[in-house]
Length: 250
Image (cartoon, rainbow, N blue to C red; front, top):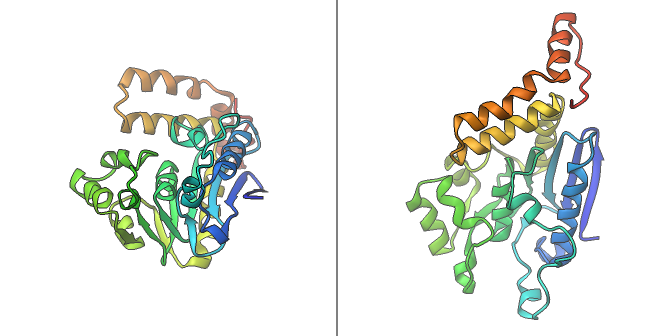
C-alpha cells in the first residue's frame, strides 16, 4: 500500500509509503492521503493527525515526475485527494513529521499542515521551475508566510535550503534528530488531542481566519457556541474537582 494509516490513541498517523520513490506523489498516493484525512475528520475519537513519510531519506519528493512524463493520470477525480487539506481549512490539527527532504509538492504538503517537526538532515525547496513547472499546489502562497523577497528566492532559483533555514523563517516548529521526529510529532499531537475537541477545532479555524483577514464579527460569532457548550462546562467542572475532563465534543 502506498499510504499506511495507524491509530495511536486519539492520534491518526498517516504515512506515505513509497520510500523507493522518495515518497513521491502519484494518483494512488494522493487519493490514499485524502481518504485517510476524510476518515480522521469524521472519526469522533480522533483529536489530531500526524502526516509523515516512510524511511529517513524523504518526507515527500513532490509529484512523481516519472509517472507525469509517462502521461499517466496524476489525479483520481473519483476519490478525495490533497485538496482535502490544501484547499480548505481542515478541521482537525495536522502535524507534519518531516523525516527527510520535502521538496516541490512535498514542501507544499508540509506547509499545508498546522505544525511541523523536521529532521536535522532534511532539506526543503520549490524546484518546480527547474523542470519547467509552477509551484501551484500551495507554493505560490508562500508570501503569506514569509517576506516576498525570501519567497521569490526559493521559488525562482529552485534551490533547496536546510532545516535551520526554514526554522529561522518560521515555517516549522521544531528541528530534531531524525529518530526523534515521529516521537516529537506524536507528543505534540497528543498534547493537542487531550484538549476539548470543539475548542481546538474552533481555535484553529479562528486563527487561520485571522491570518487570512477575517473580521472580528465573524470571529466572535464562531467563538460564542464554544462558551455555551457542554465541553466548556465540563472543563470548568473538572478544574474545580481537580480531575481530568471527559470531553464529548458538544
